[in-house]
Amino acid sequence: MDFLSYFISGISLGSIYAIIALGYTMVYGIAKMLNFAHGDVIMVGGYMSFMATTNFGWPPLLSVLFAMVVCTVLGILIEQLAYKPLRAAPSLAVLITAIGVSYFLQNAALLIWSANPKSFSSIVPFDSLRLFGGKLIISGTTIVTIIVCIVIISALNTIVNKTKVGKAMRAVSEDKDAAQLMGVSVNKTISITFAIGSALAAIAGVLLCSAYPILMPTTGAMPGIKAFTAAVFGGIGSIPGAFLGGILLGIIEILGKAYVSTQLSDAIVFAVLIIILLVKPTGLLGKKVLVKV
Amino acid sequence: MLNVTGIQVFYDNIHAIKDVSFHVDEGEIVTLIGANGAGKSTILKTISGLIRPAAGKIEFLGHSIVNLSPHKIVRKRLAHCPEGRRLFLQMNVRENLQMGAYSREDVDMEAELAAVYERFPILDERRNQRAGSLSGGEQQMLAMGRAMMAKPLLLMLDEPSMGLAPILVEQIFDLIVELNDAGTTILLVEQNAEMALSIADRGYVLETGSVVTTGNCADLLNDERLKKAYLGG
Ligand SMILES: Nc1ncnc2c1ncn2[C@@H]1O[C@H](COP(=O)(O)OP(=O)(O)OP(=O)(O)O)[C@@H](O)[C@H]1O
Ligand SMILES: [Mg+2]
Image 1 (cartoon, each protein chain N blue to C red):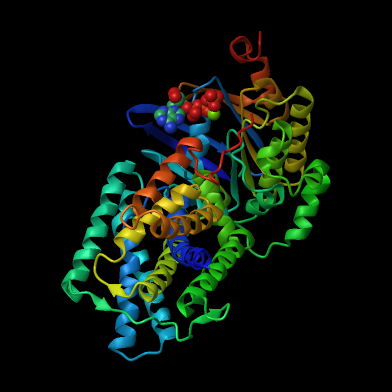
Image 2 (image 1 turned 180 degrees about the vertical axis):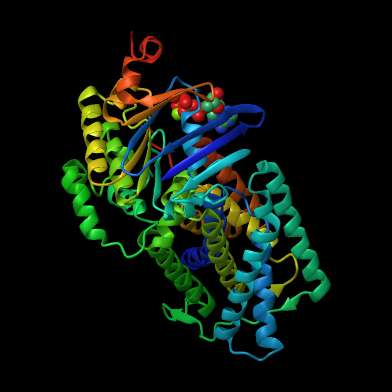
């Protein structure tokens, strides 16, 4: 029964990683850049929801919407101000800029909210689920997190495969010039991608803080790195890959903590990543492009 | 219809296009021929907006298009079918065709897909297959079909016969003539100079970034110097 309980916690934590990893992987697929500030957008989402509930007294759902709106605008602004001027620059310059944006967000948060941790109360109002005569307890937050992740992945799948915007995204991700020749605006497509990724980061931020209720300016940093790992693990640029990578990473982390060592759990996560990449350098679901003459 | 005047194009410090001027009139097939590296593809990319010229004018239907982004240029019904086809290999055949019509509004998608499938029945059979899994010839048909979906007034084709078996080359050239008869003006870039000159009205011969000869195709086909250089004697 313990195992089942750990396993479910793992899926729940993995769901959060997956939601964050989707943002990383979509931006990478379309803009071909690693947005290292993505993790800090999560933290901003957490603070927005915290402010909305604590300071303004708004209901939980409204606070999530508020966080999503603010993060969407923030994501678009980051792209327009920091990354767009570097569209033609070497990727190293873009990477360093992304790290700069990350520190900027953390320090701005430090200035606004100070380093004192805020204790976040879960936005999920449901009681825990008790199964097997109380031997297995699953918290409301855990259940909601898993459901939200499933809803998000299905919605994204529909957007990417069925809508015109989604086709434009896939076209840009595969061949930017050819996409432009079809009439796709690359700038607009990149903006939309940042908007979607940042809105997802806001949701992830709220879920993360609901599960691990300590909110600080550095709250997004580690989950950001883990989710980036998950994206690479699943095959960066692949949406199903980000989902799979996130879930697996969450499970490995929680089981590692439970059965091996609390201190070593992160090391185990990264060791598994290294092994997977040695065996399959493109990640679990990474694409191999077929070329024919 | 298309007027290109004195364009200069650089890749860093390589001067790829040196003061090139030419024009295409409505209803014509005009071909640009020249050896590898003469600058044919660069000219098409400059017209479709993928590359900015350092100097010169490009007018389409009387309006300058020289500083427009590629996605705005294609909305003016000027389509560019690039060298090497550049299909979306991860998408299926049907999605590639739909992408062809991306720049148009109010498209009756099913009717237009049906028209392409009628022209290329093999694409109908393979419509749910990934473009990357098609043979080279099928991929070229898909590229042509995708260009048809854009319903352009002027269609620029960059080496549509590249790497194809002779029978397929024939088929592609027939289609180009047919599209032209149906009202599409064509700017055709080819290494297969003889074929290109046989269907075109006029031609321009490029050498290292400059136009060296121009004229009616009949005259070009009889030009002694051209015969030696491009037409195999
Ligand atoms: N991206 C690039 N960067 C630098 N130089 C380039 C680039 N693309 C083309 N060139 C150079 O510009 C010149 C013209 O190239 P272009 O591709 O336009 O020739 P082409 O006539 O289309 O040749 P081909 O028949 O081989 O397709 C060549 O000297 C080529 O090496
Ligand atoms: Mg070329």
